[in-house]
Length: 169
Image (cartoon, rainbow, N blue to C red):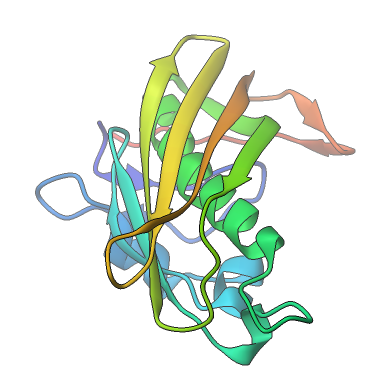
């Protein structure tokens, strides 16, 4: 696994650097943007073998009944799985894009901290499948899911943009 990461998908970002154990979490947190920043996602661990992220629930995460919206669980699962799949694809000069997200809601939660952990089930050259579990502050499983990814070669077109992946040495 390289120690530097230029991008996860098609958008070039400032170069991100891993710690000596290959963990990109601190660098990802520093460059948080978009949905991750809006939801308040904080990465604890981010490697090509496991991704762990946390989220402190606020009223912004609730649906009309005052429980965490299912889209938050689905998005959190897709986020941790996407980061792991991207880190696993990077050494091959590839990027990834999600094809399917199957999320099951197991227990309702209103407050506290959520922790999502994703691990690969299959990391092939063309596709990857990652599984993730979301737990609450008491360690109860509140959601689980699987995300399937397509691996894209640099230069591929995605939504009108060219995928750019820079492997670092």
